[in-house]
Length: 276
Image (tube, rainbow, N blue to C red):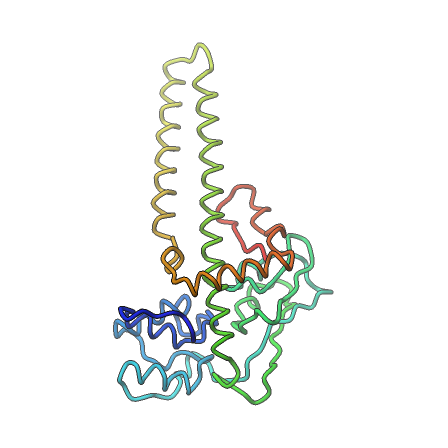
């Protein structure tokens, strides 16, 4: 891959750069970066990535200076790359596939037909299981080519960029939603405080509400700080250029203004989804 690595790059950085960036979680970790970190700590073997296949295992093992092992069968099998396809006649517009896609490769909105952007799909198949009407299938597109023979460094790089862009956007949307909730909560408290002739019991109840709201706001602040994704603030100029290019492509395709499933959440941060 061409993920920019400095001389001071950690072992986890170098391992991540050897992974295909499909973000499929078949390795048992929540994406390529957590898997790379686990390998760097000596907590995971180098044979847990089906999309990378045998060649990927050899690359990772060489960096870790360990003998390559066969692919762990519990993680799946090396196979031709596939892309998701939605049967648009069956799609109900539930947006669950949009929420599951780690690289924003599915476009659509609430109660509207969804479609997969095949050039962006990494073949992770994470969108298949959540679909309540079973209208998504994975279509092999690389013939007999498997592993890195079916997936290029340029494709891995683009997938990595889209993954980072999506995570940064979700954090931004969550922060904006929490800010809206905080404004509403403060306005409600002020309205209650302005009510005349408030009894002592009512004043005590109001104080309890204020304490609850302030505690909730502080928990939200701490959660946001803990959830901020890696590699989105101090990225290299090369990676930032890729992120900018991806955003430009989304804007040109008219995707940035598409209503997201999160719009149906009515200020519920747990309902935030991709706005592909």
